[in-house]
Image (tube, rainbow, N blue to C red):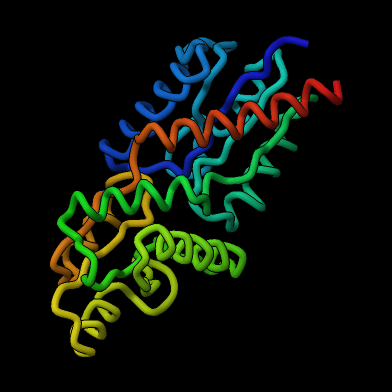
Length: 240
């Protein structure tokens, strides 16, 4: 059996910086794995796909591939896209040998990157922290966000308050205001977002003293994706 291809599956965005980040992340993972990431080539070893807004879709990429494939969902929580869209895309492709890994998050590696981003934004021990996620109507995704928040809290040894940017309550500005009302001298927002875009821009309007950058491309994130791929690829080869 030939080496499985890696398909990095992202949500998709109209924000140019967000699209660029996914491309940069794919390139970094390719370097980590020592494979070809020329995404324009039908059988290159690493491809990117999107479940919304942009193309190609996972099913379109899979139909181009002759070799087995591992799909790694570049999502920070597992909601509708991970539990519904990705399996549907795999089924529609008709591809005979596909493995889908768990989503990127929650994971302690991401919490450590978030802690780094907070410190880069000026956060210090004693400052209040709002854990800002995009939000979801899927309870499983909200459970993942809660787990991720606990991981960040452990990493910085500080309680964090969960809030949402787009879907769900409480919203980020409400939590920032509530922390100030309760006596917090300084409030910082930890961005549980992968890439820049509309949601991250909204965080800068929430009234905090500082906003951490999104998780973005970091060696720990690259290794996390590569490890997800290696584990699934070994299993594919074992059952082949």
